[in-house]
Image (cartoon, rainbow, N blue to C red; front, top):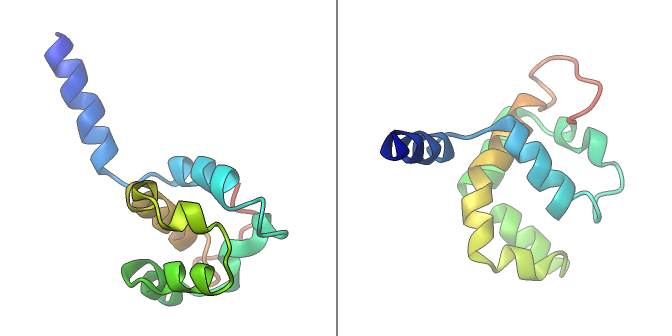
Length: 101
């Protein structure tokens, strides 16, 4: 039984989660981005894919010296899939959304 529970938890962590992206965004990003509620809708999904599939997001933050410890950490790589799911869901071309929370 314990093995099944453990396998279930592991398999859940392999998939990107919008709700987990919201939690990460609030914790790691919202303190620097003043308009956090509407930030994801500033770009189209295709643009967000470029940011998350390359190191562009990391380079932009490093160039501005924003959240440097987070962007240099291993945690970013773990969080990236969840943040990407959040930003894609609430991107400019994915419909009308009041906020990304």
